[in-house]
Amino acid sequence: MNPKIQILALFTLFLLLNPIISLAQNENPKPRRDKEKAKTIPNPLRDDIKVEKYLSIGPKAVRFLQHPKTGALYYTDFDGGVYRIDTNSDKTESKQIFSASDHGITRLQGAVFLNDQLFLCGNISVNNGKGTKGRMVRYDGISTAKPILNVVFNTVEYGTNATTFDHGWNALEISKDGKYIYANTGARTDHGEVQDNRGAYPNARDNALTAKIFRFPVDALNIELPDDLNELKSKGYIYAEGIRNAYDIALDPSGNLFAVVNSSDYDHNEDMFWVREGRHYGFPWIMSGIENPQQYPDWQPNPDTDPFIPRSAHAWAVKYFRNDPDFPKIPEGVKFSPGVQNLGPDANEYRGHSGKILDGDNTGVTTSTFTPHSSPLGLVFDTKHALASDFKGDGFVLRNSLGSRSSMMKAFTDQGRDLLHLKMFYDKGSDNYFVKTTRIIDSFNNPTDAILVKNIMYVIEYDAVEASIWKITLPKGHKKSNRN
Image 1 (cartoon, rainbow, N blue to C red):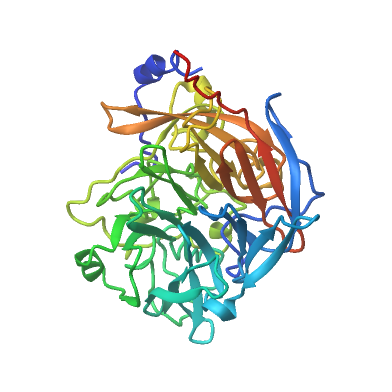
Image 2 (spheres, rainbow, N blue to C red):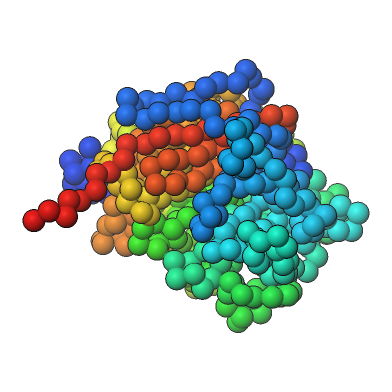
């Protein structure tokens, strides 16, 4: 079977729609760290967008969020710190309110508010650092003097690993009706290979607690999640499967859940999925519509004969691309759901069947979804319809990697570390979304998350020493007149 089978939308559909639509080691989060360089100032690519420095912050910042009732801004760091930004004094500054010793999450990657509740999610180390447990907590009454800490869940122990590919529990989102919380748990592998942590967990690949999006009632307490797929499904906790690492998930104005996914070291594009209950999105057998060749017993990886293997890839250097006759088979009866199809004009480069780098603008091919190795993060939507007409109700996403400084991404583009505008269209025939993707700001420094408050977007950056929060003013929509 040809491992280069790519899910492509019909060129005819492209022509019909086009006229209508003008990190490091495993103690660091997933965003990929490129070579260090001098800090840059984000550059707007439209005259009606303004970028200002909002605040300098400390190291390892991951999530940025706003309290829905008080309007206060908060951020979290990878080591478990939770910070509130104080704007009541003459000087805007951040104050740490919780640490890992307070909530027990030593690898904190997820945070979201619901009313006056703050949910935090991540991992803790066990078995002398060889194993891990996922953990979610909830602070009730976060704006009060004494918030109450409750445990939502802990998982049973399972193997972590000594690679860059142990993604852990990270992105969180609240359902539109406020009854459920979604939680992403990333893969513990690059592409489904064995990761036994130097023999500590023999033959361990991904398991029932990885590479999925879970859903829990927001009032859940003290759940223990087993490494048992049938039991997790019977209790209704698994929402969707086969998602390698959706480091950010978000609702659009209609309440549809979307996820942006970091793909493997193979030259897969980075998927965006419309996530629906009970669906399987392909990992580890399919990523970005391209089959994972390691699932075939006779595959012999070699960059000389397989141009989808970057010679600079870590997975190639340490031989995670390998002949693997014991690779799990596709579960019987499972049908994979495709990613959102990118119509361009930006972030739609891909490697074609011939092995050449191509651009969808020139070939008329849609991609699933963004440029390979670009690490999409910080997905947000204009759910309040507060923006000007060409942005109203639309989505935005950051790319963390910079092509010109990323050995694997550079083959495709010099661009990256930018903000993309996502103009999305539902296609009834394919029962899927298409997206027109346009760069509107570039030159961020390792951006990891964003929020949208009316027409103001805040973007937070990750750094080992000192990072920044940027305030971006987008064009505002006009209020409707009440006059007859």
